[in-house]
Length: 400
Image (tube, rainbow, N blue to C red; front, top):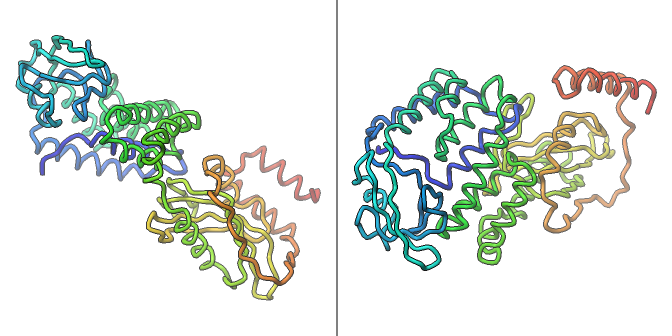
């Protein structure tokens, strides 16, 4: 199998899938194994390859990432005296590959319809590929810091992605600007798709799946760009079916109840793609939402509003669901949902309440011993700091 750099648009999704918070990050063994596989595949493909490398990316015949005199949006017309006016990416790549390493390759292009020409210095692609292979070898041995150092200064999307992956599983992840790197990669991908229309659908899907890992301001800015494509048609085409996801989430919650038919399920939020880390059941990837449920217990009485989380696939299949103990505002699910809710969009329509006409009878709240035990569990799990634990414990004892 011939290996190649991860395609332009899918790099974003790959990078963002591993750059989440510590509670959401995948195990380092996965990256170690992936790095070994990728290094093997690239070497089987002949890496490192001595050939001209000028540091630009292109798509739809347009420059996407510029270098030298070339700017994003320029239309290539010839490379090394080869006409590339209507050429695809492999043909343009081959035209550059024929130029001499260390020499200059003539390039003609159009900018805003005006013809222009330039000479570009050919670096050696083998230099960059060697550094990437070195980084993969380090990652294959779990030498995360050497992996990051080997990629220093490289701007290729695959190199940036690999740097994010190594930093995300390192013990010093907080020492690295992972969010900044991820934001920059996202901007790069969306900027390229803004120029090359053929990349837009895949880029929009990548952004849709990246909300968990991008800073709020960057996500909002990029979302505005994507929503402007084809008057919103591109974004609408990649949005998941909310009704389908919602019903899957409801079913996942009903499956956990003693009396599913009595469930009053409130879903005030939409869904965000990401990874949910359960302290007990591991990590689950899919479309995530949080909400509240009230249902009857074995005695036939309603237990009170309880926080829940549901993770479902785009096809509408339940992946994971969890909920706190009845009437608890201190549970693990509620605590994690409070951190997730700012990233959740509002539900696109008002969710109908699944209510039993029987008047709701709220069960008496948990006992003092139960609340103190739950606080101790949260403190032991690291959800509450020492100070937060002491403050919450004092409030419970005081009856606040």
